[in-house]
Length: 116
Image (cartoon, rainbow, N blue to C red; front, side, top):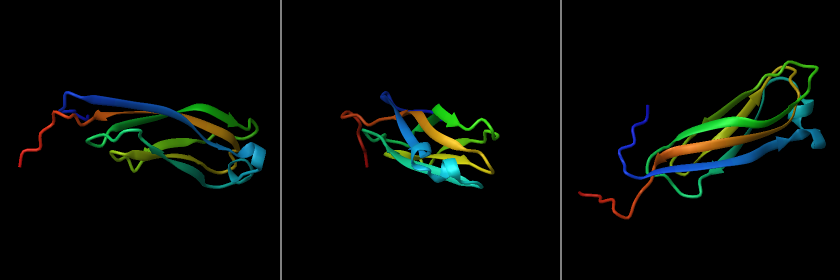
């Protein structure tokens, strides 16, 4: 559990298309084996501490003749952003993926004091 010791809590959210490999014949659609795609998501405003980040699939277009195998994570989370990483493996065919995300954490205020 993250305990926010701050009177100011920021909530940032967004949505991003990670890839659309169907139109371009990209490796997520045509490849096999372990594959991944990542994108750095930059917050519009920095948090004062590392926030909690949640990611979810909001669009997934998969081939129905193969098993659906997918892993979506937020990694390298910092005060300024995070990496959204989608992974698949074996013979899964992924045409396109869109994710949504939300980050919740402490934000700085003009009234904050840094007493030395």
